[in-house]
Image 1 (cartoon, one colour):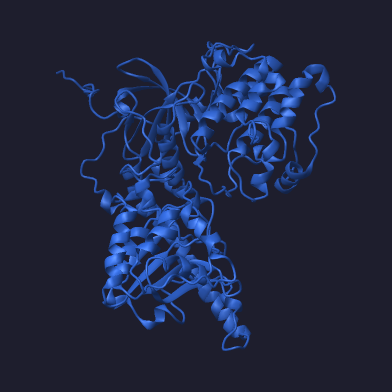
Image 2 (tube, helix red, strand yellow):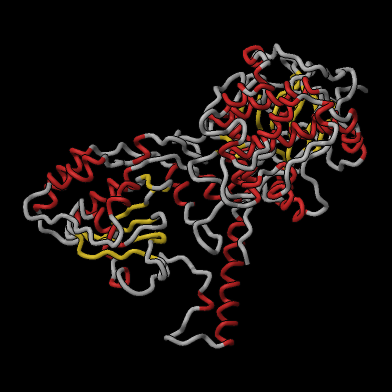
Length: 624
């Protein structure tokens, strides 16, 4: 008897890319979120590195958003000194990213085996990574984890930046999240005062110091001591530094490690990256040749040796219960029955093939889920009213007898109106991950992300708005109430009234505000004398960009309008304050029993909110 026991799997190279397209070779790495092994494309015979992440582990570690962010970000970029994405796909168990293969190993591997490196090689490595960082920063991307472990060498010895797992896009609002490896964090990150792309240049300075002297400039045994050292200790070079490296080299490292971001080398406001190129240490380099990979370091890794830890392959062979292999997807799988985090991976970790697809941006309104919007399109701004429209055109176009807004605020309304008139960059992803507008850690910006995903209709022109307001002002009809949400903090009720009165007469306005300062918190209800004016306001001002926020403006239906919108507590629209436990009850302090009861109730509310975040796969811990 005889027969065929193992018929080869037919591979459709014209179809969507999957694991069947690759020959699995040796394992070369392991990280917090996945493993890496060498693969060869069965059709073009090219070697790549395959990074694969187990979905179940990804969900348990709450890393779904990070992985999706990294995959989308890598599709956005392509640079000679970045480890670029070539393919992306998934099966029922794993997420896969096929990236450029770097056979030279990472700088950490070579530091541990060879010690400090020669000055010329370090100069070339730092310059090559500086080119990559300049490329990223021009695209508003902050890497946040520049270190020797994340700098890989190719077989010719050129340096490439990798691991974009915690990289993020940057709007005008500074980042506040503490992310990265502490030893390489800039002081402004640890001080939590907000930071921009300048933190990457500090990290590059730490890398340069470590490559030159085989030790980091700031060291300590505990995290608190290390934090204090980075923030306060003076930069001290080894005693023999002047004998081993040039003074220009020490000057460049000292410039990169300037605690003042404004004067840090590579990011000063007056010179920026050009200032780094013009520095005496770097000025001798042929930067044009460097961009074409024509400037070589002295050290070239031996491609015949394994420039990685061989134990990764042994672990894969001996300890892995479920070794990686190509598997068919279950055609009967119903993703609607999966947990939200699993559904997100299925929907948002899309297939990518660099030979068939153009690199595109997920960070503009293009029908795909938006994570960051930079320089929003006019359509997204939704009738950003120019000065001549807001201060002159609309008012002149109204019929006689319509009153102009009275500016009675104790702070000038014109100053706040400028905020309405300035549209800037917005970082939605940052709001959802790095910062929160509420003191209890919650964020009311999720709705902004949802708005940005939708197709926004073309904004009406100033002339169209003026004409409709003229007609509405002449009519006598019932009043209309609009809800204005996502208002930035800091506006006063009179200032809000002065601005919106430009559309028509306001009969009532209630602004949710801080009881101590009187400034706005989140939302407002505005009643106009004319329902049609209210509808025009909603159409014109919805998705209006103000202080890095997109306003949400809606006309309320009759069934939703009641007197409690304009007086008293309104729990439906008011965020839960964290100090409610200590508030007064009927003018008297709460008893200890009342405080304990309120504290327990508040704790349960936080636990419910935390559970909702966990169910959605959002990696954020609400302060308890």
